[in-house]
Image (tube, one colour):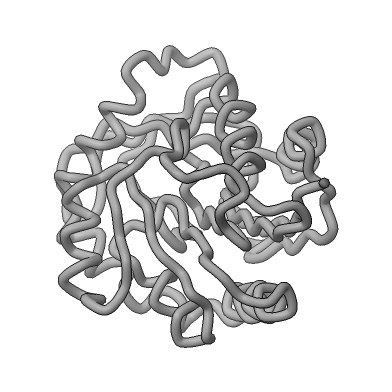
Length: 232
């Protein structure tokens, strides 16, 4: 669905948090199915220009190794570029994405890795079955009212003490994206949020927030990375 997307393209309309997001899940799936090829070209080398994000991923990998390894879910993996990066860092990462077209591309580009279609609103993973979880710029399409459900699934599938790494756009508005990635039509909401708001949701869901990184502070849409752990 998404990946390391630290800037927004043209084709966005700013709207308030009260924006009607009916059918948002189906619209998000269709939008990313439509732009899958062009999005993959857009995002493929994104990490090369993001040293701070690479540092955050390296820390995340170190924490996974310190926990003894085990499966790590990249939720909202898009074409699998972050999943593959974690694999190069020695992490047993697998990807989950809402868009079947994205998963098809991920499997083609990274045939040795595991990818499956799924939604973070209803993760089909067993309780306490994974060591760590990553959601890099995939929460940006989840409306506020669905965040508690998503975070409850994250907590459920993580082992006690397991690390969670989140990346997202920083701001105070929701934007309707109607075009992007090669000019293809889209209908997807992009929700910008303040780190304190996301951290509060995490604490309510049973996580302890340990670290925060803000990036690209002088750009129109900064980014944030939060590191948290599932409480026992």
